[in-house]
Image (tube, rainbow, N blue to C red; front, top):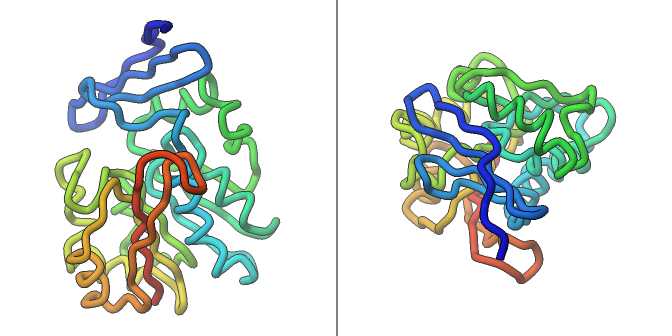
Length: 222
């Protein structure tokens, strides 16, 4: 088996080390030597986007916020689900991740950053969820789940106050979708308490269909 080749390294704002590595045609991003994402398994990221965007796709000029650029698969699936009048903002904290998506990783998801409907802001996604700017859908893929944080401070996205703030940031009938490595019925109940309707978790296989590890998408609407 081919060894992993380190292509680039970067520090996150909180000092964690990100590593971009390649083995053959596969790419991996690790944080402090722990695999964060890989190009081999992205089916659940695509399901996240489809579940969030399909219910609002017929709205006139829907506005969508994505927390976390990753390898571009979530953005690509959202663009493919939405129409030509949609606008999408991706909040990404680490400038190097944006640069990697323009270079090493650009072709993996079909160069979604070249789509005029999308733009990336180098900002904490929580700063764009202020209850004033309104979104038709919000997707969060910045942690391994509400109880498995990649970055200290992200709990403000998932506690009751944070969920209430997201609720205020959505238009009527707007969708919230959160990626998670595991299921958490207590978090679904917290979403209900924050006012989200039809709160639930859906299994999403990492390789799409019925293949790969079981991930989950938490869903709810205003």
